[in-house]
Amino acid sequence: MTSLTTCPDAEKASERAATEIARRLLSAREQRGSAHLALSGGSTPARAYELLREAIEDWRDVHVWFADERCVEPDDDESNYKLARETLLEGAAGLDPAHVHRMQGELGPERGAESYELQLREHAPLDEQQLAALDVIVLGIGPDGHVASLFPGAPTLDVQAPALCLGVHDSPKPPPERITLTMPVLHAAQRCVLLATGAGKADAVDAMLSEPSRHVPASLLRRGRLSVIVDDAASPEPPK
Image (cartoon, rainbow, N blue to C red; front, top):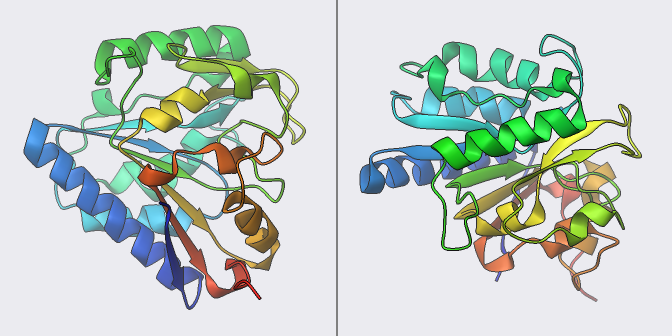
């Protein structure tokens, strides 16, 4: 069953997301000696990343991955890595640069996806299906219900295990070329934390919590391992 938490405003939602992510990472590190976190881009998680940076006093033995990336240079304003660097990575005490696993969007969709799949297989924990089993994947949701760079009705939604990473050539949002984790990897995560704020996301959140549909990729997430954190503006209307 999906965990849904509604907060009064975007700041409180960001605080709640940062607290949950930190708790799960610290627990994973205590149990296994390391923790694995994947980040998403967009404007919504930026404040949560700033709070998360301070919520963990020592980032040693935490590996940072990415759920998706635009095929741009890492210093481009469209780069998810640039957002993460500015809001979290640069100030994370003890974070080993070798533990920051950047998607190389500048290589293009196919080469970038192949390179990232090799990184995941070498450095991430793998489950019995040979899928990367990350501890926490942070996700946003688009107004169309997309997560990572998995878009409504796209063939990428049908990719099966053990594929870990895919190139995207026809994103309906610019830029069209991207790299994304597969839906099986999102399913394999110990926890996906989806953060949504603002009235523009309310319909997408409502659709996500309805019946699973390829027209709403977020609805295909593994609900027993999904935490949805929203502010009042993005909260779906209660059933009548």
